[in-house]
Amino acid sequence: MREFEPDFRDELYELMRWRRDVRRFRTTPVDEALLMRCLDAFSHAPSVGLSEPWRIVRVDSAKARAAARANFEIANAEALARYDGDQADTYAKLKLAGMDRAPVQLAIFCDDATTKGHGLGAGTMPEMRRYSVVSAVTLFWLAARAEGLGLGWVSVLDPAQLCHDLDVPQDWALIGYFCIGYPEGDHKTPELLREGWEARAAALDIRQA
Figure 1 (cartoon, rainbow, N blue to C red):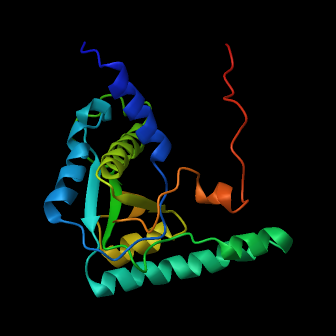
Figure 2 (figure 1 turned 90 degrees about the vertical axis):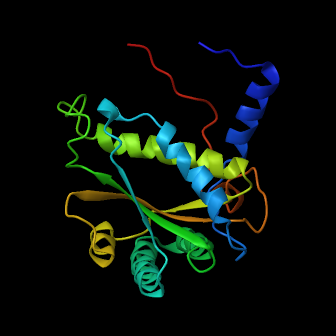
């Protein structure tokens, strides 16, 4: 097993600390070769049974982006209605999606019906396929950040409606809608923490069994 130098390890942990959910983007186009280099991280991601169940849809057309944006607006209004008082005021101020400016937008799915991998590891825990996609997204996220790009994960959406609007196969499950581009600014602190929505846990809760 290869061992890495301390300086490399320090840089890796620093990269993790700088991995932020970005919602404020510049409209500067992303070079296609750069994007493909980041997406290549999926090829190095672990997956249950080597099933590689991730399916990526580039949302480029004005029609598809308008549908995704409308989906978000409806879901966001419904989410706001579930809060009241100061919490509602804080929620209303949050910017929860970068769909208005992000030059690259991807919808990433899990193919729950894939036969690749022959069901190894997914027979008892079929959700492992979806966890595999999330693992791949995490590697992509870190690769994008290392290249100076920001990524925002939009989860305030109706998954069934988005699947319909993008006309994907019935067995594909939405993992997330992602906005990618150059961030307006760099922040090591999460926006939800900066805006007072929630605080990080003081310590990691590790239990013994």
